[in-house]
Image 1 (cartoon, one colour):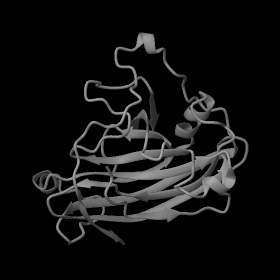
Image 2: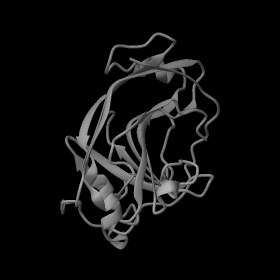
Image 3: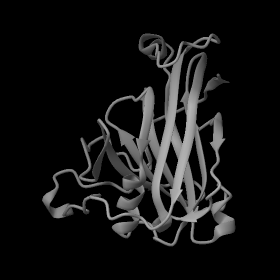
Length: 232
């Protein structure tokens, strides 16, 4: 269970817009994290301190989409949530994660990072698709439309779904003490227009995969968290 999501909402004149009308979408952010109330310099993570405090949290871009434009502008009513995790600590795992599964066959490479896709449903019944980076990306600037195209070109999300909300922040699951998450240089650049035919790959055969994706809730046991959020 997520206990807090300190975040900043990103805006662009073209939103909301159908997923199939996104020619390019560049997301950017720098971030740092560590125990205590003092922010770290940009791109600095105190891994040992977070481990000692038993911190479980992610750092993510969070997007909401719906075929109904009005619902796409409300995270409580949107039928689809799309997350891009650029940081993961402790026992934080995406919806759909299975501890017995080493890797799903749903992968995409954006820049130097490989992202693995998971799917699940939250307590409201929202379809949640989460792309998780193979390693923490404390500086992230990437054109992420291939991650969106992978979903609608393979029929996982309707191409007519409108992207309405985009935010950047950290979901807090558990920590024994105060944790400071600092973010800077966050930005979004949306280019509306017919989506180019990108090499987004195809859904692999589940029969050919020894680790098929699991559509389950995370089995991680999580408690409470205190997360101090600072934006510079």
